[in-house]
Image (tube, rainbow, N blue to C red; front, side, top):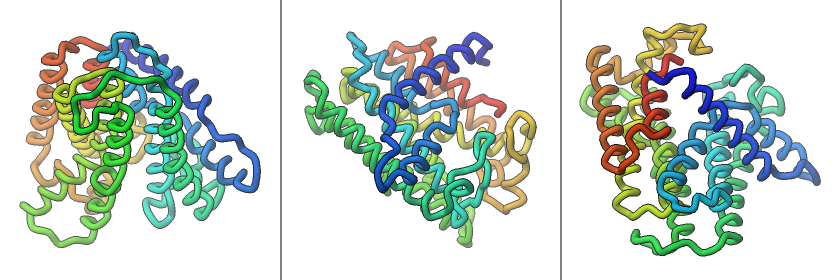
Length: 312
């Protein structure tokens, strides 16, 4: 398990991402001032900044020069996209949560309408930030993927993984599954799709973009995408496990909510033992991929273990 020195390093890296984010915040002025205030309130709510931390680490591992100004706009963009999804998740029409990370959610402070706009604003501003970063940066070596321009390839990944063929698609399936009367086999397929897209897509995106901008070959990008998929699914299964056996004080949220809400999870479908075995299988495979890429024992390898086997 990750030790205290790792957790200290993770906090330092999160603090670095915090500094990067502040460089890209929109100014709170003009007729859109309240919406921008709500956007910045949401974005600066704290957290481990895991997705940009992963992106930066993947960039460093693949890059020979590691000029971070190349990737910084994308670090900010992925966190803006993640934050917008949380703002919308918390809305009264969705999960109706009033607290996140120990403080009032955006809709609880600014109202549901302005929170909706803040989420919309963050999603759009994420792409404004990434596109402007790509336009102002120097040239990168050609990519051997579908498009030789690494910035266009990175933008394609950012858009696809955040949209209907990624996170939004997973969110949609999750909502539809709540009231659906599905058989066991179909529910297993739906749950796999939800975990892969709702949770896994932005993790995959973070790793792939870091790798693409860092100089990875297409084959290596596909490998890191698979590792990200494993981590995302294992992360969600571990979340299901912790909802049953976790410590409420450590988790910072009530346990047993899945059962109380009759929510179908990997544990309810496959059983606790199979769920734990699946987490280990996915974790081992992700680590094996990193080892094949030459990154075993790296900070990214330790981060995967930390995420998959966390207690909170």
